[in-house]
Image (cartoon, rainbow, N blue to C red):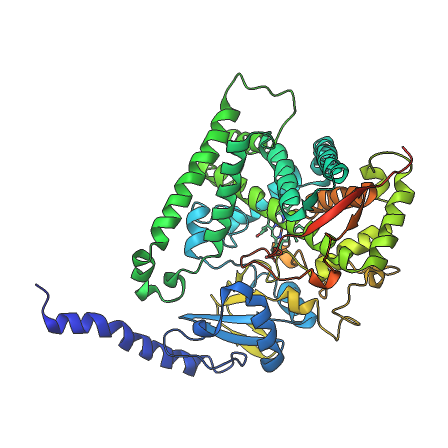
Length: 502
Ligand code: HEM
């Protein structure tokens, strides 16, 4: 039996050590940016809530400035909220700010950081990123998937058209998530779930659970000696269960691709490219099936969710702004001509549509805090000393509303992008919906190819109205908690078939 003295020591020792450590740290970290006072052990954790973290951080930045500190349990964190400081961090100190924190959920679900998004900044990440950019996400590869995108968007337009004929209300959240996941499933692993009810819902449930686990709060991430709480409240069991389910799914897809009798007439998909990488073993690491699974996960997660969320926000903004809706519809109908579909080559001419997409990504960035980063080594920024292993949140949502960078920042006004070269490719730090620096989103071409085609055709083929009894003020902009900013309440609209004279 454990003696009472040992028991008391066991319970109190971590606290004593923590206070000693904390005292030493505050002495050392005199030059950290300012921030709200926290409590012992938990720091500022009790002041934050996962559901709209970027909004709370935005409010705090008004009080503490464009760079401020938080203490997340035992982890120090800084928050950057202005274009100038984003440039300082993501351009002048890009290498130091290119790490990712090692958190329980992402670590487990990415086979210990083998995905590109959650890998630490190391040789493997550099090699895999280069390979992806050259072979999987290049503009040539993205163009090669044009027929898949076109086919799927056409099928989907037919479906909405049938809603229009029967005056049925369309749930755009549901329709757009289903479309973007169908496109990515075909591009990534050649499968079409649209009509396979059970399989499709299994796939969607898996993706949802995956998202939930990635964004979940694990005590062990911030206060390791209280990690037993995660076991008690069932978080570890849930994570293990999700991991096993996903692993089984990835394995099925890989087995299908390794079957010598598989029909390959539809061309190479992304799993084929990854299997080829394994066969060639041209990277400096031993490239295994676990690497393929982690990278497969990257594509599924990064591509489906962000594109669907952005399309929903674009339609939300447009239905609330009838002037912009009318102007962009006139443009796509002008360049689309008298057909029943506007093709990719004609969409390229639509500069106002391009401005509408930029304005949507400014006001509703799909990743409002980008993906959390961690400093690789200590560095100095704006006169402050940031220690190595500090978590870094770049608040794109706040930066995109900075009144010093944007005139009338809360207004949806696409004209602000006409007649200038302001872009989101990582050179203009007031507009960073895809991030900037070494970790900038490598899927920008793929994202835009889908966004352009989907939105242009939604606007080309239909006029959009609010359901009876609703006004545009009833359309809210509340968001769901998670890494990706989704509209919480579905956007319900009525489509009316528009006759393009075809
Ligand atoms: C509207 C669509 C999209 C948006 C708004 C978006 C946004 C982002 C953001 C904010 C990041 C984090 C950047 C950082 O940490 O600084 C990111 C990373 C990433 N995105 Fe995207 N993304 C989109 C679509 C896509 C697509 C279609 C793909 C690929 C198929 C993709 C693949 C990735 C990957 C692999 C990373 C991790 C990069 C790394 O850590 O090195 N994204 N994206």
